[in-house]
Image 1 (tube, rainbow, N blue to C red):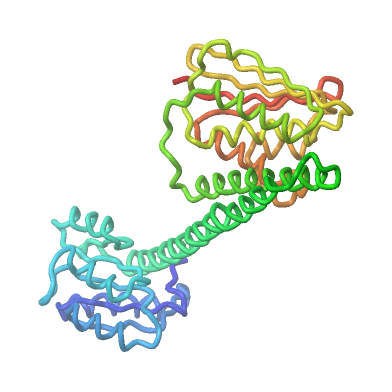
Image 2: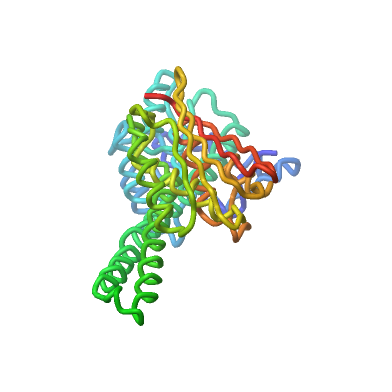
Length: 361
């Protein structure tokens, strides 16, 4: 069923009185048909861009859609679209073009219009459907833009404010005498907490950039230094963990971005967090194949639970898994972004093996 919702308003900008009457009649015909259930708050008609701008300014509520002829007395071509959108950025613009101007219609969409219609091909149902779809797309785009801005704000908070506070904590910790027994435990806890905050903000910032869709381009990344640095970090953060690294005798290069270290870090951390053994052991094995690089992280725990494996393998929403947190969701998100794959093997007797396969550079 084609509908123009009752809370939608349309501004028709058309200087040809006959064409304008045709479009108004099309909408009225469907509204009068009880089988169509089409309602609208009304169609206002003006004959120029200046009149459209004035109507937009005078309207108490913004128009949901603008049905716009590109060739008007005071404006022609793409400039017409730009002027209307400057006056009312929230409106869903549907451009009206002549039979030979299909290319112009496509260019108008590229300039911000939601759709275009060829005048000779317009029918009542096509007109109503196009307006309704254009309004919905515009609303969805506005929602995505709001989400993008919120992500950007959260990214700034995580990467700037919280990180700065963590730096202050670590700075003050350096001024405490670790040889003083009364202060040694405080030093250890402050440093541990500060490093944890820094690591968490890096992970959160990486995930926000990935979700925002504006991540770095993939480049050649040397894996050796990343693995060695993250294993060293793991040993410092988790006292008593035993590690073993294999396959890095030669330089290994893969396709990734600057966040590959964050991915490796989260795989290593989760191998300890979900281990459960009295003496946790973590292995990292790197293997080069003809076209791929395989990174396998193993542990000696009781095996990763199924619900946690789902987060790793499928990048499912981790918000209902309070003991999993951000890390595993980040791993799945970035491996997918790199064009790689994840596989998970878990056995109560031999622990868990998480295998990441990436493109070899």
